[in-house]
Amino acid sequence: MNYHSNSYQLKNNRPKKSQSINKHVAALITFFALLPLVYYVPSIVEEFLPDSKWLNVIIAVGVIVPIISYVVIPLASVIFLKLNENLMKEDIM
Figure 1 (cartoon, rainbow, N blue to C red):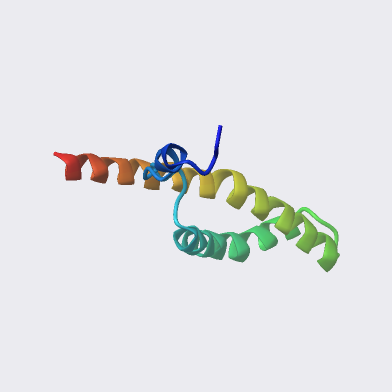
Figure 2: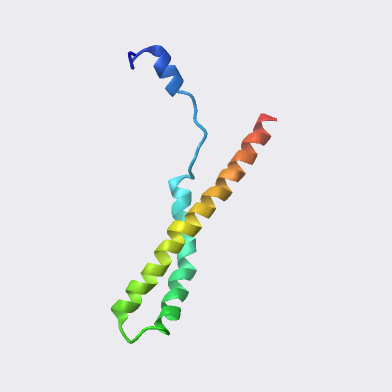
């Protein structure tokens, strides 16, 4: 098959449904989600650890990063994709 043929190009030039949120929106969501986490998590973690600033920072970051990576961003993606999907349906009707 010739990959430079017009039929192949037409198939791949179709507009695809967006499967992820805009990177700027993701950065904004991450920023606002980090604010309370960075403010509260280190002081909470500090209560359970010995007086070691490095250990406190390592554990706090170890708690914050998974929350952002595995909870906040996936949840925000689902919410924004559902909103986008509903807006697209309203545009069609």
